[in-house]
Image 1 (spheres, rainbow, N blue to C red):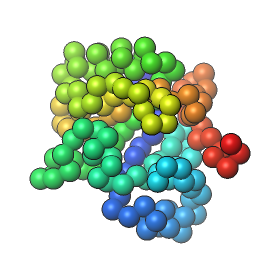
Image 2 (cartoon, helix red, strand yellow):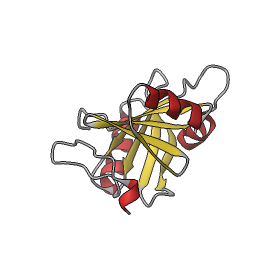
Image 3 (cartoon, helix red, strand yellow):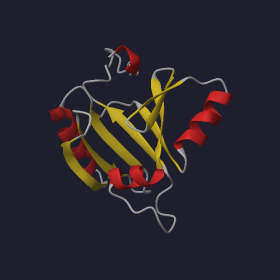
Image 4 (cartoon, rainbow, N blue to C red):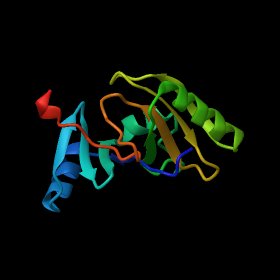
Length: 143
C-alpha cells in the first residue's frame, strides 16, 4: 500500500451548512451527487451526509463507534482495490464493505483499522491520479 491519503471525508449533519462554513473560510467547493468536494493541495476534502457515509462504510452511526470521518485512498485499478483490501485484512483490519461497483462508475471497498478508523480503497476513473498519486478533483461543470 502506498503511503498516501487521497481524500478525507467528513460526515456532516447538514451539507449546505457545512459547505457555507468552509466557503466562508475561503475554500471553493463543487457539489455533485449531494457531496461537496474541495481541492486541498494534493488531496480532496469531502463533505457528505454523516448517515450516508456510515452506511457506505458499513458501520453503525450510533454509540460513539463511528466518528463521522473516513479516510480514502484512490488507486489506479480494480485489481489494486482487491489487493489492498486483502492486505489490510491480513494485517488485522476488519472489512466493513467488500469491494463492489459504485454509483459513480468506480469500484470500492472499506475496512476499519484496529482502532476503528474507516478507510475506503477506491478506483474512480473520474478522479485522475498523477504519477506521484496526487488526486485532482475534476471540474464538474465542464462535463
